[in-house]
Image (cartoon, rainbow, N blue to C red; front, top):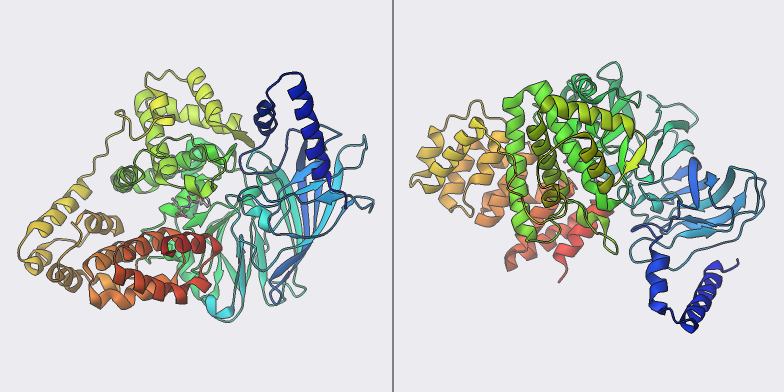
Length: 622
Ligand code: BES
Ligand code: ZN
């Protein structure tokens, strides 16, 4: 293997010597060379771009490896340039050209947190496009992939595997240009154990066959972070004419019931911002270790079973992932610094879908919870990273996954809607999704498009580039939650907790009322107050994950012993980071809490996905 990195380094120092000799400060070379580098990728799409990926692989649960080949079809803007791929921990067996010729490659030392990469010398040919075949295997510790033993699944009979590629984990299971600015179509042929079904973010089978071989097509070009695979003992059931649910057997019925409004959501979305462009919209409910609420893998949203509340009260998450079919999957953030373009637009669109399907009174409750969460987060972040456009170079893109991108992003767009009026704003957004479909977008590109299409007399920079919440922040008014806040206040200041609690009229309270109630109480509550609430409302026994999470925060603060077994079972029974992180953080505030956290984590850690593990490791480190 020829070490091209070395040659590159030599020529670079040669240039530096010459530059120095002719009096240019050598220091100028560094930033100049790096200016071409993307913040979280080795790829150089200005030189070579992947247009299509074909994956031909075997999924082996015994060795915990996905092994096979990735055939990359390339467009070469610069015929001299090498192909710079991202890879993180992949075992490369060979790199060949289409006619079987071995290509030289090297794996430079890992740049901070972004993997070692794979630089391939391409044959000097004029014929375009070029195909490169990478034979490789993942390793058992690949960060994107979680291999679950039968005991770690819901039905406990068969093993399960799922991937999570966003933000920069696709490179841990597929060699690719792992930057959201590059789009490719893809196809795959996978061999999995015969008793399991494989599904991807592509055209999917609906039942098992007896060969264990499944083929997939994604004919619309997508960025690498939307590559996804799940393998398990999955069943399918339709819920609408272009939508359905995959889940393990015992979850299937409940899941299908919960998602009954999916088709209405798709219709509402299309009415707002144009046709759904991905043919089918299916949802897979993964085992409970899935580290996110949902992930917008195209054609197949990956979802946590913790939204299966039994009353359809947590389906805003489906509206959210569905909305990404426009904001994110169709018009994609160019880099992770522009993450708010994905998430802020999606929260906005999610809200509009919820309003269309369930009414304004309902969606304003969601908006209020969002606003409260945002205000809390802004206080917590102080002034750090509270602008929409981030600078995450040299940092983990996960750092940008705060409510700023989501909820400051949402309120920015809501503010624009309120300024120009809904009619104009909706026409603008529809046109935006149409014009930039299947392209990537930068923050600056969006602002330019905005300014040339709408007249808005507001300080846009205050939202996009400045700290905190601007004074053009929209106002959210919800009588529903005002009632709840009054109840919480009465309870907090009252002297007879059990009498007050039994007086509340909560018959028509939804999950959102309860969330608001629990978040508005002044923590820590006294033992008497905790007991009164639990006796009256049975929080410890709640089967609703959002209510359980909020209640357990109060439980930890008040050291309310009767709910400790529930705390333990909640932390070991599911791996959604949004629930784990606040609870572990709260626990480590005291010495005894920290000891308990460590005890629970020892049991729970092996069942968490790497995404959650990394976060909790950080919280519990000494
Ligand atoms: N795309 C995100 C999840 C994500 C973001 C994964 C960044 C990795 C890196 C997804 O659409 C999302 O936002 N999920 C939320 C739910 C939503 C209702 C706010 C979640 O998982 O909590
Ligand atoms: Zn999202």
